[in-house]
Amino acid sequence: MSAVEAPCVLLVMGVAGSGKTSVAEALAARLHWPFQEGDALHPAANVAKMQGGTPLTDADRWPWLDRLADWIAARLAAAENGILTCSALKRTYRARLVRPGVRLVYLWGERELLAARLGARRGHFMPPALLDSQLATLEPPGADEHPITLHIAPTPAELAGQVAAALAVIRQD
Image 1: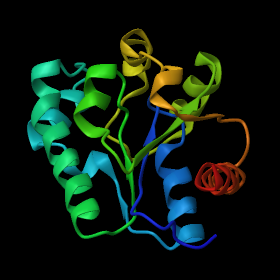
Image 2: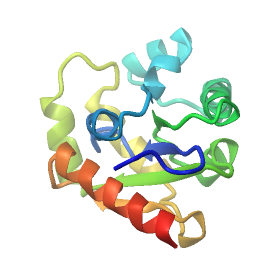
Image 3: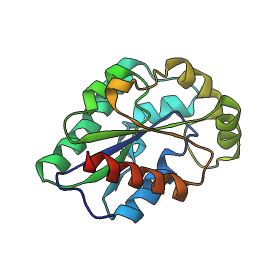
């Protein structure tokens, strides 16, 4: 797929274990777009809190969301495409990030599948114990947010293909 006419930032969202990073990396390779792992922009205090098994509060998240919003704004201002991962669990968080040129990619799955993935994951600061707090916080995007919504059962490469196909259709409308 070629780059879209206007700059586009894909915000790949979902709870821990939904495959945001894997899908975003596959998308970046497929589309040849820059990719930013949203977790890499967390302040050290947030990472330490999550490593300790403590869920983040809204007050913890706002500075992180501002860093993500700055990354999005820089891409769009430079007329560059991009792909960013972020759990974006609440509508208020997405409102801070989404603007013209930003498209949500919502990855969802059943709790059992998410828990199994988290249990198999190694080397990530997000402990499986925080899954339930993420699911309790999650406000799935509404139709008015125009998400590309995908179940996480397919492989990341297959999901990236589905996103690319959806983008092609969206750009034809």
